[in-house]
Image 1 (cartoon, rainbow, N blue to C red):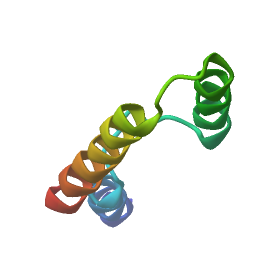
Image 2: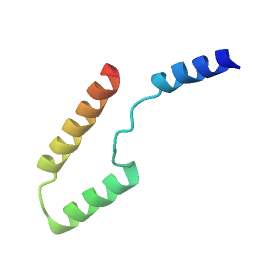
Image 3: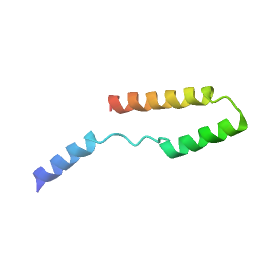
Length: 62
């Protein structure tokens, strides 16, 4: 039973960290609303891309 706990703890360490992320449907709805208002979506997309990049970097380091 002790060996099972050791393996279980090792598996917990391998799981990716909990990082808040924006789901694709929410992201597409935000983009649609910005397009309806006639606003420029480029700054928004840059922020989203940067946050995704940071999430990947954090995930790789853990």
